[in-house]
Image (cartoon, rainbow, N blue to C red; front, side):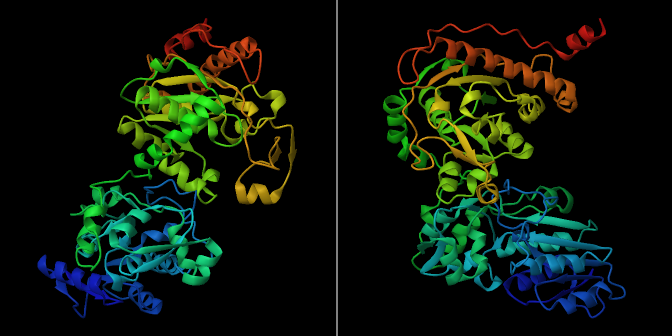
Length: 528
């Protein structure tokens, strides 16, 4: 095929030419059938779109076109909308894609960070420097591509007739801090306003993750990276004086879990569990030693401290890390963002849940969501409607047994007795309102109430098949069945409790809940 390579003539363009020539293509022919456009004047791209005889147009684009946002679930597919701010410099990538899309045979390949300083990626430039400005309290996962793998992705797109967007990255991801440490680059963390003054708006790239899935490029284009993100970075760092590529692990968690970070907090968690909240528990043997499962609990206290205690208790008793699905508003605050992701928090999405279950993880969810956490104290132990949550769909679709958990005592750490409606709080924090929960907001110190946690036997998927996840009646009934199990146990524990701060509630006995009837049985009952 006659192919023209145009635009910025950097290392990636040169590597692309070499690979094209090696595969028998005629490169830079004056009458091309295909053009690969690298960043350059958009009027040149405009001319290519209308150039006679050009049946294929491939655009080198960038994965950061998705933007850096706490709403990014990670490992994003091509259907994900861009969350780039209108004034972001990287809007130029989207502008180029819009122009290229006018060509009937277009394809845009969104590449992750290409490991060549000349290609202009901010993070790669930092990895090549002695020091780098970073955002205090943020350590997102990032991905890399070697120049050769990036060129291979573009060549695969040129040889294909498939149109649209394609993501391309090395497999896996790595936290920014780990990458900079391996590079021997000294981090200079600043609050975002100062970091922007020092490095411009592009520093936003280092605030939240924008990792992508290359699955479509793999299936449609036949693109297969030769190196993972870690392997490509290690090879790049071998050429940098003062770098320490040996500090890199073989792989990292796709969402940022850092077990060393968890263990570093272990003594503090032990103090909270054993001394401050004196957590009484039973039924942890109901959590399987291995295999998939979905932990479902009532959620109170408006701060995610109950999730942290579940995480610690299960790790201590069953040696499993629970991967809680969390809402994006929890990641808006610096440091809390890092804290939760390093403890294993994952932005809630159907895709992330499926990936976690495919690896046989224990996943945690609070079906009441943020409104459960913000329940006024008068209704603290009356559960909100579980059927509004996606947990039933996730469990049935992935055939994951549900492990109900009932908790009493966590509503008293910040008893919500009033509220201040604030548009600012809703916009900036994602909270429904500012709670009046003594001693908050004067002091964000939780009260030392005594907690009681009852882990109940798993509810299996007997009689349920993945396709039942598309049946709204089954989802509603299953959701309410789990809610009923939790509610009757919460009611039982509240009835037994004599004091908010002292006393024993659990004795190994729990109310018996009826089994969930299979769909065929339900249908028969409705017809009778």
